[in-house]
Image (cartoon, rainbow, N blue to C red; front, side):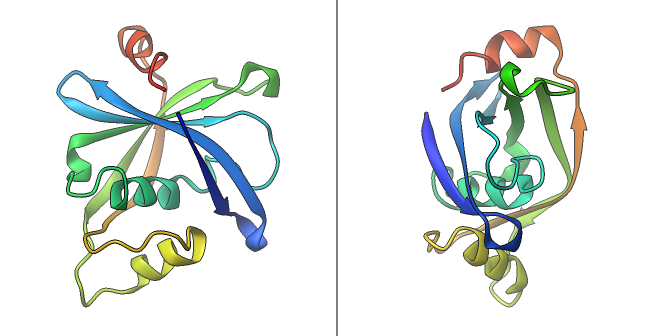
Length: 138
């Protein structure tokens, strides 16, 4: 599992952990919210996902990636596990700079050549079969 430090709302220092694994025929990214301090993973999910796509998963099309959120039970979340799907996703074109600027603003360390965008998230419950798989990704 890796730790990801990011700038949340109002430039608030924030942290989460994430793991990458496989689920069925796709790559899975699981973001873990342990302690609440700063901006939550739910509120920053697009930027966090874009960071992982542009660093650890560089070259992997977001259409081949599934994203999950996990909140520690100690946080008393409404849902401990959720899958996040994005209505819009693709490669950031060189002449389209706003998504790259967002990534740089939130995660200043991401300086890669090929970057992906994701947008319009929807949160869904995780079915029991998928939960068995994603709950061990670290």
